[in-house]
Image (tube, rainbow, N blue to C red):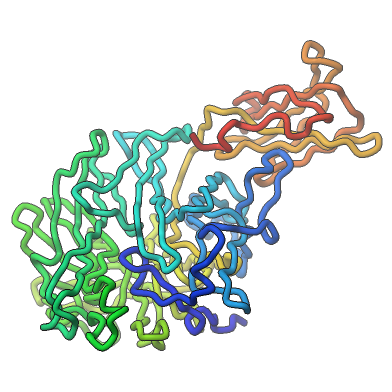
Length: 530
């Protein structure tokens, strides 16, 4: 039986203008090792890919593959900033930070470890210039989680960078959203601090507002083509947060995150949907005029919302073709002087039915994990086969349900790891680099280790061995087994090659020559991403 997580009571730091609300951090936690420092205990270790160390994810509830939506699980591993060691120092992550793709047995498929001085969030599939792509946000944060810089990356099926984007005109990209439309246009969430008199809202005269904008960029050129500024359209008086009071000068110098834009969905007809966490509301906006068409939730809702369908501090609001709205309803938590306040309600994936003519919504379905309240982050993905996937953000879980709400699958990251969102997506990876291999000899037997980071079509491995590169013959063939397959040989050879085969026995690619005397001799030069 799952025990309620202690994370909410232990949080002393959270993302500001990035992933969560404002933050307080112990002085000992600020003096720290790099923000993405990690340990290998509890992470995967690979002989053929020693530089890769993704976290091992525990399957808490398994399901038959045919019950789950087809595709891979996509997460981006990073550290919960609020979890510290008993002495107050930051707890290192388990395994590398960065995007990781897993199969439904939680075996890694593609791993991209990011440098330990940056964070990576929001890993997902996209379509760029008509072709399949992967994208994620990567940036720098302070020890308290303030976003200092952010770049969105796009790679193709060969894992080559085909686009990257940073903010213009002083705007900084937050990790929350990056959606490619129209072939090469990208919608993002952006932030900028601006001076403002906050006395009318209980703050100081020379205060700072953390402004936010929905922006569209041309990915091919990097140019900003559209910007919708929240402060011009949403009254600050509708915020569920308050600026730091004059009685707290130190806090008053930080920005008031009155909006906290955390989801954008471009829609047909020149409209977009924007979720404002700090407003407890989502807004349908006419792009051409900038006018708000309707507001769902919050203090000025266009719709009547029954008590069982109300939401607070929400994430990932999405409007669907049948008039339903899905979201991750955190139901949690305000932020006080010592961190997050107790939950206001249950954390749940929420699906509502909208009746635009009656200006009313009704509850359709909800999904949750008993005892789990989530202070920040999270998403609800309605899957093509009718299933629903929940990523629990700050809490280290993701789970897949039937449409009716039956829990099919649940997985847990090691503490203090977390993922802003979790997705299930179809993907075919075709690396230009070849397989990685190593051979280790023990007594009269040799074991060959085979892997190919990101290759999704490998079914079997063929090992060639001989006295030199000119005299190689087949010495073993084994079915692929997880990210790295170990292949035991009866004898030993001076030279080896590895051959990747698809399900029909066709050769996909060959490795370079490797030897038992140099088990790390053959690895792709950039660890599977370039």
